[in-house]
Length: 317
Image (cartoon, rainbow, N blue to C red; front, side, top):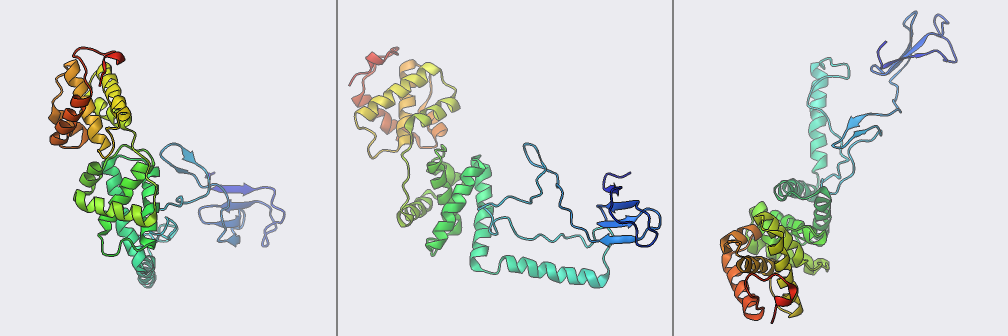
């Protein structure tokens, strides 16, 4: 017997036509009928059991649909009318019914984008997913960016600004809040937006929403650059010592933490003789070689390190 056909041997009442108690429930056709005479006792049943579907990690047996998400204009709760003109049994619909379904489908699509904000969110969040794929960030970062963008729309920050610029700035703020190592240049490149426009939208969101952006931990950037360049652990540790000394000497004020981290890595490579060029460090950190060179000379002028020395005591002012 098919798994979707259940024999109800404990059915309280018999068939109204023949009186037999061999009653079958067919989940495919949503009917209860008699095995002997075929009389349909009930139809259009509701299935309150589990509905199995697969996720990325495991099989989920909860009877739920798509989870609620902020990164969709309708929160992922809208109705979806299929494009196929077939009924539940797979049979083709008549011409009259297919025309009716077509009109319903058109009205359903229009109702989902009835407001300007709905269209705004649809365009912005589709672009947000493309940025997420290019940056390689998690869904939690995307949800945070969507929340920030919704707040920006409520405060009318998007008025007079490009949607793409504001949603990209929201993604950068989300990366900062979640301590995800993506700088302004990374987001600008992924979104294909000028850095100037992106920074303007970023400052507008932070100012009008009164956001508290956490400071970037420079040591994380040292680890990121070191792993990209595949330099030795001793060179990486020396770069961390140089950066720590720069923080103690208040050299980080008013300077880009990525530039200082890149300069510390390059300075450490020069001392260690790893042969890492300024262009390689600049490409790994996403900044210009001019920035690396200027920050390197600032560090070298204040922090003196003898060559081929690795101990902490050799770092002098």
